[in-house]
Amino acid sequence: MRILYSARMDNRPALPPEIARRRTFAIISHPDAGKTTLTEKFLLFGGAIQMAGQVRAKVEARRTRSDFMQMEKDRGISVSASAMSFDFKNFRFNLVDTPGHSDFSEDTYRTLTAVDAAVMVIDGAKGVESQTRKLFEVCRLRDLPILTFCNKMDRESRDTFEIIDEIQENLAIDVTPASWPIGVGREFLGCYDLLRDRLELIDRADRNRVAESIAIDGLDDPKIAEHVPPHLLEKLREEVEMARELLPALDPQAVLEGHMTPIWFGSAINSFGVRELMEGIGTYGPEPQVQKAQPREIAPEEGKVAGFVFKVQANMDPKHRDRVAFVRMASGHFERGMKLTHVRTKKTMAISNPVLFLASDRELADEAWAGDIIGIPNHGQLRIGDTLTEGELLRVAGIPSFAPELLQTCRAGDPMKAKHLDKALSQFAEEGAAKVFKPTFGSGFIVGVVGALQFEVLASRIEMEYGLPVRFEPSQFTSARWMAGDKAAVDAFAAKNKQHVATDNDGDLVYLTRMQWDIDRVERDHPEIRLTATKEMM
Ligand code: G4P
Image (cartoon, rainbow, N blue to C red; front, side, top):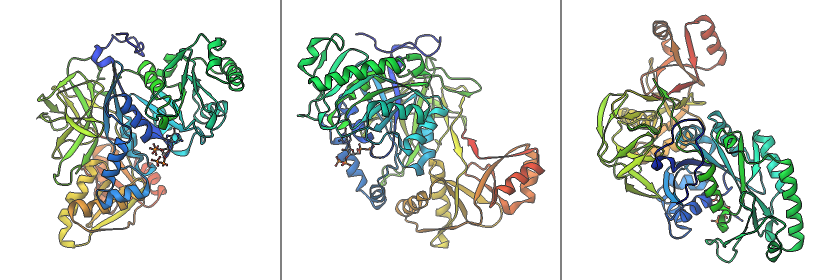
């Protein structure tokens, strides 16, 4: 079998084939651009589902299961992220789903720490939209390679050059066309594959089928006229000539470094362009990458297993209080039943029932390689940022926690139930759904989130999952900062300013205030103390 994958980004040794064939990525897009539809077609071509419609049907079934999920549906947001694995040609794809709504940016950010690349989906009529831009910026912080899919070409869409220009200008990244659309809207016939000189034509009769590709010998091959009417052919020739002159040619290294994005045009709903995109992810997308960690980096080819938790989802099944920690394998070959060291607590955990996520079913994972995502059911031992290894005390770095932008006081409807509230809130803090601060002075809890909608989501989850009605009320504070620097100075400051100090769920000290001015003043008056808006979860 021909090996499609490209050279590695650096001069590291070749990866074992099982690892080298893995592509772990997320889709970033603005709501409605077609992420769900594209995911479904990935699974269809990946053989994970038999018929398009299954994923959506399952999503619908899940959404209607409860009031909380109903709220998700009404608001058109997806709160829960999951991971899906499937094979395509000789690649193993691991697709990590990112929540789409801007209120959940922290969760999204952490999800993006677990992938090696992103597929950016844009709507051909709308171009780069706000949420795409935000997510793109997050990818840029990590220099993630990005492959672009311009969707909905079967509808009236913008001029191809205009779309490419908009991406280049708006996102400051070089764009190279991997395919070129022939006609738009009702006249959309398919694409000319610029990488392989092939015609790919859309099959409008069956949305789940793709027509055979037609090999041609360049745009001057007379065979092309059998498939493309003269007016479209003339336009195609002109545009391709211009594109080759004006736009940069595909440079695989620049793609891997995140400076260039190849763009494919298609129509996810018609399954068109999806296969070429998948081949593109395989060929130009990165293999599992080296993971930053302390005190040393973790390379995927290392013989020993290491992995880190980037997401915790609690109460996936309301009947069992289970939590699933989503672990990105950073190195080695994991086998079910392995005993791994939980580095934060230095305890050993036997991983006896790890799960893989195939489409939306869970399946027991007998093995996993660097690059894979597995779910580990647990009772709260595993937290976001935790590292699991075969004994070495390594800690994966770079999984951030952000200072919340909104703070409110949370009280139990029934004061006798404050203990239960403590438990519920600390669970949500561990899941990463909110920051929970316990003031050192006075009672109650201060809950911090990034978007206002999260207070509503929390209130309804606490009521649903713990049977505990709660109230969120305005807090006297508006900002929270972690306190770092000289420990003695921090402790002395905390003892003197009890009414402004709280502890977070890990017991770390936090300074609460109403004004940025206060933060500046503390830093000026106490140069040995740093007030930080992010904390690395370790
Ligand atoms: P999202 O996850 O990014 O939010 O988008 P989703 O896939 O749900 O797609 C949003 C809408 O766009 C859906 O229509 C979907 O059918 C449609 N769509 C996706 N890909 C294409 C495409 O290639 N061409 C066209 N014309 N439409 C596309 P909807 O009306 O909201 O849902 P439905 O009634 O079709 O299920």
